[in-house]
Image (tube, rainbow, N blue to C red):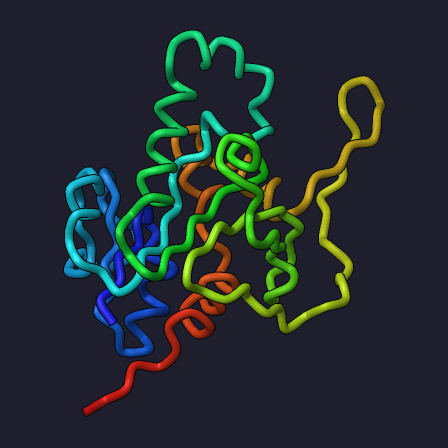
Length: 209
């Protein structure tokens, strides 16, 4: 299959699809960090949506959509940034492709568009993290987790300057320890288990002639 993985510079999903034999391309305005520039289209994804694809898997930016940033929603509504995020998300929802999946954290698109088909967590697919991940799909089945019992999540714990005990999930703590310019990229990278599940369950191994 010819598959577009939109807004993905990490190439996590693209690589898994390529491993199965599919003609998959990542696309992002940033250069790729996944090590395969020959599979990466560095440009605005909008014109590519007019081309024929067998499947589109999209990871639109959640900066102006996620509930974690609700404190800034009022200003973002006023200056148009939130509407820009909504409009960009909807480009994928309205794409003329039979198989589409859109990933985003819990946010306003559940009401501005519709409720997601599914909410998953990385731990369900083998990664030690608890992160609500929404999937809006068309022509694709829900992902089937291979882990149904939540494991013990690893945390980093410390005492702040006021003597109060604090803790964060280890994956998030490690992300916050990165230089500021690298944090958003690291936090948005698809967890390996989810990337593998998307490729295997939505695309499967490519049939060879």
